[in-house]
Image (cartoon, rainbow, N blue to C red; front, top):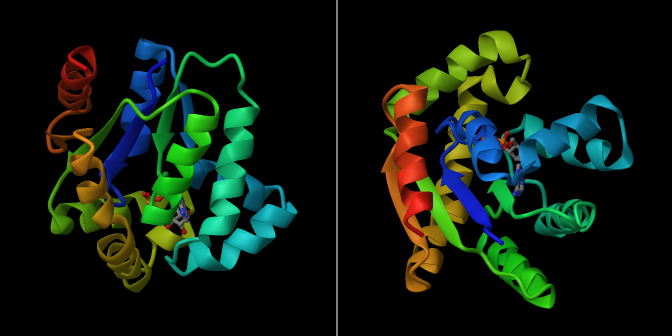
Length: 190
Ligand SMILES: Nc1ncnc2c1ncn2[C@@H]1O[C@H](COP(=O)(O)OP(=O)(O)O)[C@@H](O)[C@H]1O
């Protein structure tokens, strides 16, 4: 079983690449952002809980996010492996994920980061905001807040996975196909 964490700042292209990688490697794609947005759209209890955080560019509390992620994994018992996109985003989430996978005799195979400069990413998000309808993509202040959240809470995961020799990084600037190829090179050599 191959379990990959796709890592990167907001706008780095995780969702775009996941669409290609999931088919190529037969992985179940779990995007916490997509799951939250689906729940918001359908006005579920989870959606109501997450909405304010998301619209303000803040992280949804760990407790809520971890529980949701676990139930998504449990809901795919026949999966050949998972592509985690947008999770973990805090050390507490990463520890909970490791503990949870251990109970299933599984582990994270590798974490692959898509790297790009902040200015490029902010411009990409504002562009996406014109068509995505995402409130968190339309306001530069909320975007900045997501970067602050990333720097404070998510960036420490780089060290967490480096210590386990599981951290790989690829250049996230280039054509979509070029970047898929860079990611595939890493996965093929795991
Ligand atoms: N693992 C997580 N922990 C907490 N909140 C999350 C997590 N994943 C997604 N969210 C919430 O959903 C929002 C959108 O997620 P996502 O679509 O992955 O965003 P981005 O494009 O910023 O990477 C985040 O800004 C955050 O509020």
